[in-house]
Length: 441
Image 1 (cartoon, rainbow, N blue to C red):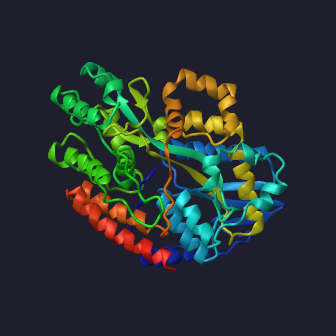
Image 2 (tube, rainbow, N blue to C red):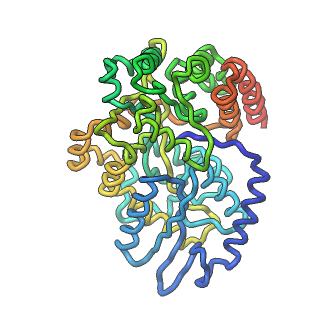
Image 3 (spheres, rainbow, N blue to C red):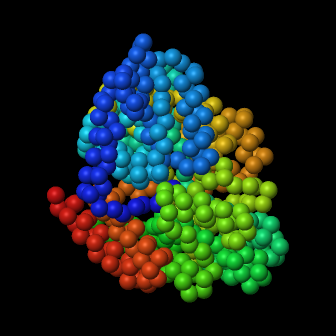
């Protein structure tokens, strides 16, 4: 999922550091109440931090239990975080206070940032010793972003991309052909207005709050984040402005798109899903991992469309399992053992069937159980179909300053009703200065 939260990082780090020190003051010995690390009778216990919500969080707990039951050398203790961003913020504090867990689930941009600062453990020694880990079978597109300067710092856990979900019964009752409606963003805007006019829904469609969906639409309108040489930020181009202005106008002028925002963690996300299920909104743009929360008796799915005749180009990325370098080597070994277990084809099939994320192993696609399930449940094949032509996830060369500028611009457009041109030109100036400074180092 793409929600990027902008906060005063220095203040957040200070506060979290204090909290982390209070929680872990008892240290990493056997008497630790937090379970950060415990070694007794040859068993190594370590925490696994992940920012999953709802069904995905529950399924992860099941898989953790299955791993713990499958062997007696390691015990993984799952620790739920509010979302991916909070996971990273808490991890920064834990690294600073030497209380990092043995395993953490991270977005690729955080893997890149932490890998560059050597805050993650290199995985080559664990891969070399593994007896049942086929690195060549992991999808190449995901493995590329698991490395920093040719050093492997992460194992892809699952892939994700944002796809279209809609109430198939509502579209049908309003006389709207879904294939035609989702053929382009222009068609979807028209279909959204028709749903309202027919009284089929209060709102026709809902993008998710944040820069992620807006970036996808801009890319599918022919936009680029950086120019080919990588020295100019392109986010104020006509393609970007037109795409973002379409969304701003649909939310604020026409009021045919609905935007939920705020709340704790994924609250705004699940509020949107609930309103679609209740029939208040005709459809929404959300994660491939939402499928465990949806009723496919009334909901169907499509790939994201293009805009202005351009081919669809939304981003696809993976979530990664990494081991902080400051954790004990035995904890890192426990974390890698779980990563090996989680990426087994059988576990990947179980996870994908339950949640809908993209499996990370090539061999999953020849697994009979997986293929049969996708054939019987076509919506679960949409994310993989979209990933074939998707844009690679953007790795910010400024360490997050470009994506931060886009997040601020997205709030201006979506929440403050500021024109896309004004918001994006301001973001371009900030982002370009950051890029220039980075390249001048």
